[in-house]
Amino acid sequence: MVNKYENCYILKGSLTEEQALKEIEIIKGYFKGAEIYEKENDRNGYQGRKKLAYNIKDEEYGYYYITYFKSTFQKATKIEEKLKANDNVMKFITVKLEG
Image (cartoon, rainbow, N blue to C red):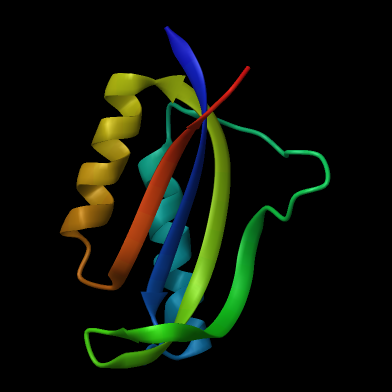
């Protein structure tokens, strides 16, 4: 069964913007096989470098990226496993959306 998901991940702020953008291109490959879509009135994609509310792994800043996608639960789980294994990803969350 295909569901809609929202995924947000935060890359280490100590990366240069160029390094972060390269890492984002690698991570986009994790979503291969999932259908990426734009959600009306929401911001998709690269959100930029922002100050964190609290330090994560001694980092004060992070690069945020949001993806809306449709996939099976198994594919969403595989994406999360790859994000967890990536040393440049400090935090991530995947939420199943209604409808």
